[in-house]
Length: 182
Image (tube, rainbow, N blue to C red; front, side, top):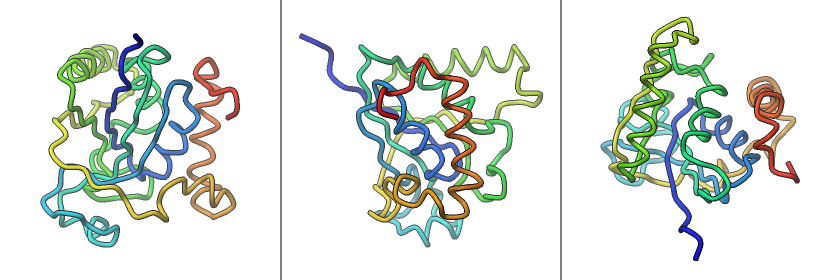
C-alpha cells in the first residue's frame, strides 16, 4: 500500500507567487493559499494585510512523497523566493510576507533544520537566511478569489511582472520536477 499524502505549509511572501510555482511541481497534488500562525480566527485578507494579526501569507501543499520529498520541495521553495529579507519579498513589506516553513510532521522539521543549516554554512545566498521554522499552530484558507490567482489572472500587472518570472525561474531551474501538463 502506498504511503499517505503529506502536507507542509510554506510562506514565501505573496501567496500568489508561491502557489503558482508549486501548482507546477510534479507530486504536489493540491496547493491552497491561506494564512498561518496568527492571533485572529478566520482572518480576512484585509486584516492580514494590515500587519496586525500575526499571520503569514502561506500556501498549504499536499504532496505524494513517492513522487517528491520534503527536501526537494524546500529546495524549490528557497530558490524561488528570497529567504534573506525579513518580512519582505520585493515590494511586498510586512510581517505577513515573512519567509517561513510551518510543519505538522516532526520529520519535516528535521529536514528543514538540516537544509537551513546547509544554507547557513554554504553562504550561497550572500546574506543570512531569516526563514522562520515553526510548528503550524493555526491555518485558515484564504478567500476563494485568491485561489489559483495566477492561473485565473495571468495578464494582471502583479502576475505578469512578479509571479511570471518566478514561474519561469522554476521551469528553468527545476525542469525535472515540472508536471507534464504544466
